Structures are given as structure tokens and as C-alpha cells.
Length: 402
Image 1: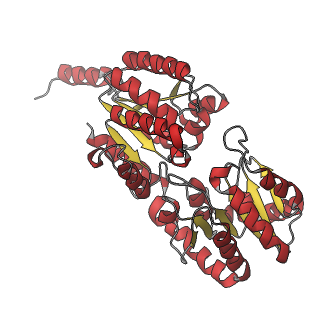
Image 2: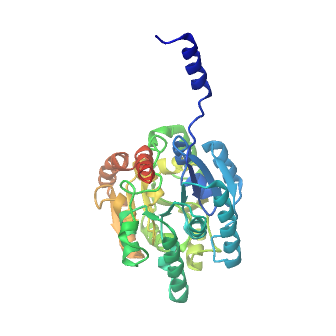
């Protein structure tokens, strides 16, 4: 028979039993906006299973990550350009932090964070060093700069224990360029770094009044067909070709508009002067800059045009598709995995203004085709790329390391 003393002893043991100590997971991006936006919600989810720490350069977005995701954050200044002295300093600061914290996993995103983060993690003896590839900017470079970047890319991968391309096409490119071997690479789920919140990107959440007010503000009529681009307004996103194609299109089709949503980065990847002049002088091209909530702009649009030169797994195409837009995309990895030709969009050759203009004209003229593609767009995203699915697939990968 169990004594009263034994019952009280057991009660006291349960009350004083220490809580389970979670293994540490450190996530790193070069700039804080990437940590906030590209991985939104994922930090909070992983906090159920790991002690998550976010690292990036300083900024308001890092404070938002700390508050919204409920994780600890740490500042290490990193640059997106080639800055050897600053990179060495960042590597040393990360090394000291890793030696102090002793993380189980260091997981980096974005190129510079990958290079300094993986090197520092290897020096510090971190057992699991994971780098996600969400695009390869170096593919557009040539000559000596390309050779230097190739060396850096291989060095980054050599320091990592696992490489996670966020699309199957990107994995193929990585292996074709001999950056690493196949045993080191794995695509999580069906692709994407963070999936998509399908309950947020839902066109039905944008009211009729909101759409009407936005159209009035932008001077868009009910008969206008709206093409939309969302992303950085730079050369590598195919903006030169898009603007030229639309400019020709709008000369013979007065009932169309092109919305350009996103920031310019003239210091990194400027547009052609001719393109700048066309944007300025064509009254049917509306460059609205950075928009915090893109949903109203997508909701008033008819077609996403996304002729990018290179991508990992483009969130914009996921978001627009999830809101029911057919998409015209370039034939590159990621884009051609989300879009199926003639089903939920159209695929055109990279840097081909003529093919892009032809596809835009086809969807401008054919309302039934737009509607048919629209009906399939959202269901395809829900089936393949919901956030909870992507997060759980990544969690399974982490757990395998234990």
C-alpha cells in the first residue's frame, strides 16, 4: 500500500522536476527584412521544438521578429556586397556567439549570411550546418567576377553539412555547376522556403469597397485589364522586357494597365535609361513603390507578369496564384514548378520580349482563358504549398538530425 509520505514525495518531485531543455536552433539572414518576411511565422512554429535565435544585421525589422515571433535575436552586421574586411569581422563575431551558445543547428538563408554563417559554424564545431539556397544571383555574372563568386559558392557549400535548394530546378543547377554533391542536397517537401499562408492570401478578404477605392485612386476604369508585377524593380526581374512589351501592347490596346509594385535598387541592378523613360512617360504604367499589403493590388488585377531571369522559389507567384491570378512567368526553376503551361498560367522564354508580349496579348484578349486558369490557380497552391505542410516537412528534416 502506498503511504501518504510517498504520495507527497512524488508530488514534490513533479513540482520541482526541471523543464526539458530545448536544443538551440539559430537562423541567420543577411538583412533583418529577410528574417522577418521570408520566414514569417516559421520561427514561432519551430519554437515549440527548439530554442530559436534569429541573427541578422540591425534594423527595425529585427525588433519586429523578436516581438512577433517571440524569439531571441542577436545583431551581427553583414553586407550584401563583396566586403572582405567586414566579412571577416562578421565571421569572427558569429564564431564567438556560436562558441558561447553551442547551437545544435545553424541554418542560414541568403548568400552572404550563408558564407560567413557556415564558415563560422564549422570553425565553432556546430554539428549541423544547414544552408538554404533560394536563388543564385551569380548566374547572371560573367568573367572574373563569376569565377570569384563560383569559388565563394563552393566554399560556402563545403562548410555546410546540408544544402537545401528550395526548388528541384535549383537543385539541378547546383549539381550541374558542381557546387556540391547530391548526397548533401535535399529539397524540402515540394519546394519553397516557407510555403504560403493560404488563409491570408485570399482574394475574398479584400472588400468590394476597398477595390473600388483603390481603382479610383489609381484612375483605373472597370473596363481596364490589369497586369501586375510584384518584386524588386530591377533588370534581373525582367523589368526591361516587361516594360517594353507592355509599351508596345498599350499602343494598340488602350484598355490595359501595368502595375509595378516594389522597390527600385538602382545601386545594385539598375534598369536601362530607355526603360526608366518609358515608365515615366506611359500613363498606363503605374509604379506604386513598396506596398506593405499587396493583397488589394492583386485583387484588382487580372494577370501576374513575372519574367524574372533567375529565382529560387518565387513567393510572389505563390501569392498571386493563391489569390486566383493566372501568371505569365519565365521558363526558370521555381516558376516552371508552380506554373503549368496552359493550366494556371503561361511560361515564356527568359529575356524574350516578343514571347512575353504575345502571351500578354493572348490573356488580354481571352477572358475565358483567364477565368479557366484562375479557377485552377488557388487549388493548386493549397494542395502543394500550404505553410503548415512546408514547416512540418522541415521539422521532420531537423528531427532526423537528432
